[in-house]
Structures are given as C-alpha cells and as structure tokens.
Length: 320
Image: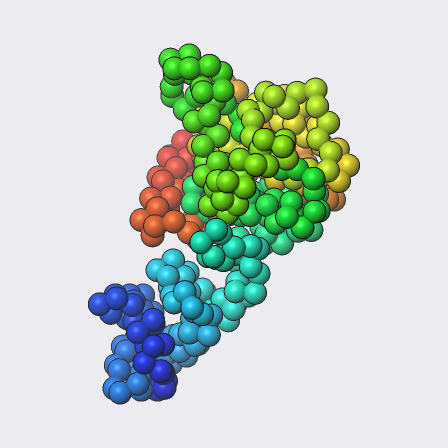
C-alpha cells in the first residue's frame, strides 16, 4: 500500500531528525518505506503499518511545538504506534506542570508519567515506583514547587534514608551534614533546575524548604507541607510506618522508590514493599508503577533497564 502526506519543510526536518536518523528508525521499527519528493512524503508498506505510521507522524508534528522532536519522544511515539495507541500522544502535551529556570516546560513524557502526575493531583499520598530514569523524583519535585508557589502548602520537605550503597558513612570526611549531603544531592539538583539556586537558598534560610535525612522526621507532625520521601526502597518497615504517621492536615505526600535497587541488609524487608502491600486498597492513596517504557533518560538507559529486567526474570524462572 502507498499513501502520501504533504508536509512543510520545517516539519519534515523535525520528523526526519539530524542526518535522517529518525527517518531510518521509523522505517526500521514500523516496517515502512519513506520517500520524500518536494514536501510530499510517500509512505509505503502493509496497510496497517502505513495507517499507523501516518497517524503517528501527524501526532508528532502536531505536538512538536517550538522544541522540535526529541529522541525520547520519537522512541515513545514508535512504541505507542506498535501498540496501535499513537493517538494518545497528544494527551501528554496538555499537562505542563511548571517551567525550569531556563524556560523549559516540565511535563509528563509518557502515559505512565501522566497517570503518576494525575495521581499526585488527586490523592493525599502517592507512591511512585519504577526504575531509574522514569522521572519519579523530578516530577514530584515539580509538583511540590508548583503547589508551594500557588500557596497550596506553606513549605516543602524533602527526605531520604541515608543508607550506604556499598560504602560506609563513617569513612566520609566532615560532620554529619557533610556525610548525608551526598545522599540528598539529587534532590538539590532538581530544586536548582526548577526553582533556581538563589530562590532555593532564600527559602531554605527561611525554613520554607527543608532537605533532611529520614531519621530527622521522628517525633514531628508535618502539617501544611508537600513532603517527598525519595529512595523509599531503602527504608525499613519501621521507618516507613514512622514516616507515614508523621503526616498532618493540609499535607501532600509523594513516596518514590525503585524496588530493584535496594541497599538494605539481605535479611531486612523493604518498607516500600511492605507499605504497598498493606495500603494498596485504602482510598486517598495511589500506587503508580512505572516501567522501562517510562524511562526518559538517554535511550541506552531504557535498554539497560530492559536487559536487567529480562535477566532477573530468567533467574527467577530458573529458581522455581
């Protein structure tokens, strides 16, 4: 089957990518042939592939905006097209949470991320569980900063368990704050990008933004705050219970973690795993599971995540 699509020069350039690398990827992944003749694009292949290829390209062009088409967006559009679901790509452009200091919009880039953002808007407590690169912490941070700027909460509290990833805190130089700062660095990085270092420092000095290890939460009641617990897979069940029972009126809570990257002792269950089992049927609590399809870092990260998932599945099947 052969169909044609008339496109502007700038749309063709965005669609094909630098040195036609997107064109080759679309041909290979969607099993179609693309021929450009003076702004008229011929799409040749099986009827189903051609129809979905054209629908996908129209969606990409309509949502490309000023930023063009990023590689992650192209890869995700191809995945949706394979599932015959490319029409849903337009849903992702409607939900801008905020802008970074450089003016870049922060928004969900996959349907899994959109579900996660919707859950944070709707429920008091949201669990975001998934592999590295799925935007769990970054999107939660964007939601927290937006709520703070809109006066929906009076402060932001960011916390992490200070668990050694194969290294010992005692060997690090400096006082306790110096020792735990490396564990909190990813939270600082996201804050700087979205809020700016100067605004962050001002609000930190006023006590309106707090970044602290999880142990510092004991004995407190956290009211009228947006609270993010990051790396929750490294909490013990007792720590998780302690954290969840700190939550007061007017607060929103996001708990993020990657169940495949625990640094706990082998005989200790993860507080994240236990909490998900216990709380999954309670109203007002959302549990969002992101997957390799939601990875928005370099495409190679997605391949690494998928390779490890396949390895773990194979190992588990052998053990049965």
